[in-house]
Length: 287
Length: 352
Picture 1 (spheres, each protein chain N blue to C red):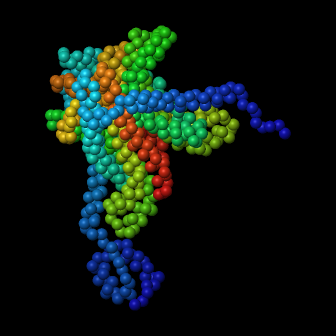
Picture 2 (tube, rainbow over the protein chains, first blue to last red):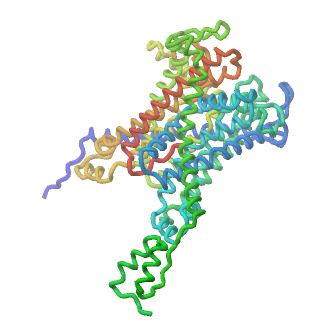
């Protein structure tokens, strides 16, 4: 009996191979900059990091030495303020979307959150400037915190919602069936079941705003000296990297690389932690 | 004491499901019915009140999302009134940007934003779609996780670090290797003429492309995964090759979602600030050549906002911010609707 399958025509064979080759090539081209950036960052950054960098404040132009200790502390302070504003609001909004979520209002909130996520960070910076800096008449870490907090809300709200929706309804019913009031059932049973996912969302939002520079330029503003008062202009790692990178001094370029390395290590650590936690299949076990 | 019989059941059930009042209890006692232990749970007023508070607090949280959006709009509109009143629509067609003379036209910035975004999209879209197809349809399972994790990392690098890398690595490469080659073979297009500074529209476009690839790739991947497996199997069963399967079954079903991803990438490119500010050259000129320095809407705000001393100057910058806000809101709304229409039902992850 003759075989039913005809050999592929050469044209079809060639386009198929070409297509597979091209998409593999695309992957290589996308991964290349990542390798290049990380490689160069490590190469330049490790050479410039020393104890002084982590413990000293910037020296004036022309003097060598000095560091970014004030910027590291400032970043921690601004990010802390941002999280204080953004995390409760985001989680609260996410719970509402998931637990009481029906009707037009919820769709509107969901949609607005997604659109807000795409609003350029510099525009959020302008809003924080006109809301906080103009009435106060001075730049402050607080204003920077407001800007970053606003940027965290939509991400946290949407991931919290998603994670809560993965919690099976039987768990909610079991809690309510015991006679527990709704607020305790939601907080202590539903939210707790989804807590790993919710934390993941918060970490992702945190990692995203940790490197933001644009909204801090005219809210936290930067500062060459020590400052731990949230009501004063405050240095931040990304701003410091930016102003050193565009400066003409070699010494400052080195410091910019060191700062960048520290920033990226913090962010990659956060993202990898998230990845490890989520890839353990927590949600699958619960379901 | 007698045990309840089956005929008592409806009554017993009724008692369990509704809160007994004093009148009910009295009625039951009068009827001398068999005494059945009954437990009726009342929720205490405090816990009812707490539930009400809890629910409304959460409502407030979710309304805050709408509130923030509203406040941003309100603040930007009210602070740009001065410039809107003075220049009107001429603001978007004027080519001079002279803070000293108080004459502001935003056309060079709009042009710079559009051109750098278009360059970025042209470079990023084929790569991003290629990666997404490779990851979902072609590559071995082992590589799948590694590649998508690496692409995610690309999205996690802060803009300012892209800028730093751009200044010290990308720009020298462009100036010494890429631009001489381009001007030798591509000068006839008019796009690759003029002195090769390295810094300029081309550098900004390339760095933007690297930055928006992860967004487009992750959404495309999501949309491709949402294409039902049966579609692929049907096409493969007809004897299609891999490429034909992807073209006929996958891409055709997913094109609206991919379009959504591309538009979302465009939105990110339009609003991207730091890396572009560090690489584009910051000169408010309209030039056809990609080698020439330019300026974008976001970077003029970043550079000049804290120096803007008089009210009109500040107001003009805020108006640029307002325009940026309106454009990105429209772009994102369109993109979200497209992506939602495809992945509706399956989860829509936020792309941080």
